[in-house]
Length: 360
Ligand SMILES: NC(=O)c1ccc[n+]([C@@H]2O[C@H](COP(=O)([O-])OP(=O)(O)OC[C@H]3O[C@@H](n4cnc5c(N)ncnc54)[C@H](O)[C@@H]3O)[C@@H](O)[C@H]2O)c1
Ligand SMILES: [Zn+2]
Image (cartoon, rainbow, N blue to C red; front, side, top):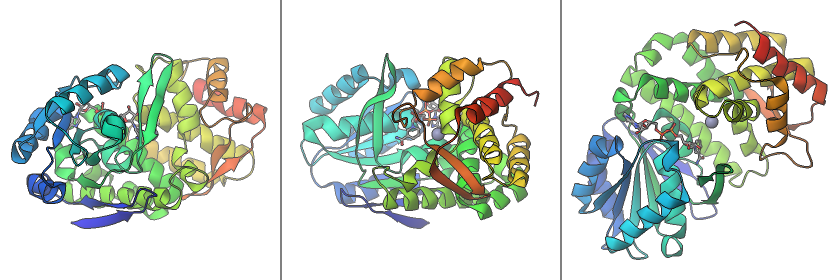
């Protein structure tokens, strides 16, 4: 078991990663929670998996939402908040999020706003949530106008990561999380990249020793980056490697054709090509990234999925865009991405063209 510290303006917290730690959570959480009633929030899959058992151990209710992005709404914030009030929460109460990024984001918004803020504990149950969304204190829900438009920074008081929970995760979700893991390797950690290449068989069959080591490494990277730049003024932006084109592709295809992981996989291919074209990324890196994505069955092209014009229009509307210009996260080397690059529009168009036209 390892403990990773995250520093935050709100006080800092630790991320504990340990195989089997889920069984000890009621004791750990109640030891810190005091006398105020706790509330567990889960979805219809993670409630039966862990949420209900944990709620029982805490003497709490387990509020369950329907699984999936369509529950990340203000309507579900209201329902969850009402259920928590019905359960007698007070300002010392703890909200425990047991689930993937959807439950975690919804819980973050509730915990940030209910009684002007109550304690939040994350127990992430998807690979994406364990290595990404549970760490860093961002929370948001969707509006009909777009994703993640209403939210807050809400640091948890603790994050508990149990890689054993990933054993029953559907393959598509696991693979989507792996794209994020590969992103950490490509953008921030060459050693992780090498491990993912050399231990692919173990990673893919979810060998727990290998998986735990990989999850630990990713949590440590995310913790380090967000501790240095909580509000994304600089370095934190490197975590968005592959996400500019990735998000645009997801939006252009109605969020159904590609998983988030597949979309950012294509986005990484585009970002890497841009880096090569502007002379920043060594050509060999593109080949290495492509081979790794391909070996994990992740796409580096999305032939005919959308038009270049559609994707470029969505790129220009990226949340990070300022005055119509998007700052790009590009690779200087394998394991070293840097944010804030200005790229001529024709270079972007060429790279987008390529990922939409190339036969993989
Ligand atoms: N706050 C952040 O910093 C941040 C970062 C990245 C992504 N996100 C958000 O995260 C969300 C996506 O999260 P996600 O990919 O975890 O999806 P998700 O929460 O929808 O979970 C995916 C599916 O897996 C099921 N599931 C979860 N854990 C399981 C388990 N252990 N075993 C079996 N099934 C399980 C869920 O019920 C769901 O059906 C998006 O809304 C995204 O915007 C937030
Ligand atoms: Zn992502």
